Length: 221
Ligand code: SF4
Image (cartoon, rainbow, N blue to C red):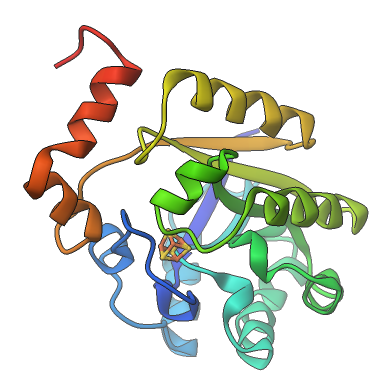
């Protein structure tokens, strides 16, 4: 059976800080939180192109879903209910930050057909997290991962390679820990220098970013 994910992008309005490499508006092309009508229109438009009988999920990506106001989270999730009740969509996935996972939020998500929660872990090395301006610790990732699994959600852990302070060893160790934390899925992103980010400033000042890429993959230009 073919699998489709209908992506709905929520920009980083709910993030407590801007990570040094991030400019969600440029990455996703989304500049504000989508309205109710826009969400419905995205779902309908995508469903019209997906063959009947496919496995379909709706994904809230691009920011810090559990950081937005609880009522707004409910509003977004309510919009998907019609499609899950009809059986046209089989589940919801969302991406969020590890320091915005707690019992209250998970209990709320449990009352909707949310199947998978993806955490932007990015690295499980304390120095890399700090140098990247993540604003959370390794312990936050470990705690949130355990809680997500305790509530019966599938856990996704996203990682990035080539962040400031990263090395081949640290990336490999992060991958090993992602498996040990029980992730059912992962995404591995390369670090890119996006315009209007702190990373761009670092890049302009001293090519710090390229330096790390070369360390990760010796011989690549
Ligand atoms: S938590 Fe994610 S969306 Fe928010 S600023 Fe950092 S990378 Fe961007």
